[in-house]
Image (cartoon, rainbow, N blue to C red; front, top):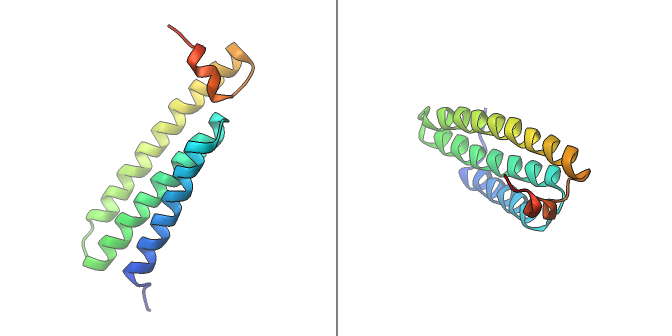
Length: 102
């Protein structure tokens, strides 16, 4: 079984990370911002897995599991914030967050 070259995997991870970054910087809907953050986290996980497959160590897979755990925690906290924001302001626009105080 042939594996993909490390350059292709890292280029794909870089493109996915860039797409996620563009989504975070340009979107106004907080749900889309959270999805873009997930894409960025998965891109960094892909880079770890590709690098660990290249050098034959399990460190990249361990880091990917930690990234998945972080992503799950981020989703849980983010969705909780979205629900609270929608209950209070009846919108999921990021500009409303500047009005949230204490």
